[in-house]
Amino acid sequence: MSYHNAAAQLVNLAEAEGGHHESLNPAVTGGAALIILLLLLWVTTRFNRDR
Image (cartoon, rainbow, N blue to C red; front, side, top):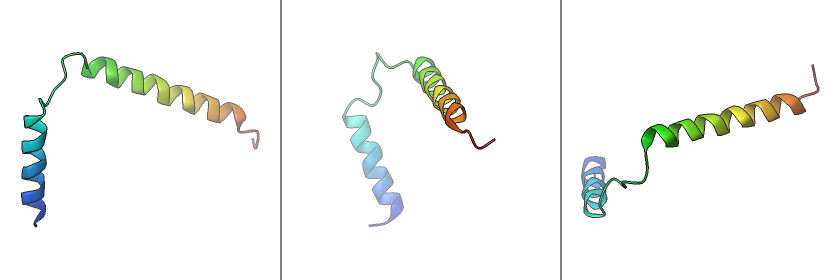
């Protein structure tokens, strides 16, 4: 099985399952991920006492 065939089958599977979910807003999801990553960065730099 080639990569192209595998990718085509995954696309067909995603479309059959509905594809997009109405309750997931990409802006809210991305914003929440950004806030979480920034919080993790802040916590990591607070615990870094090597400086």
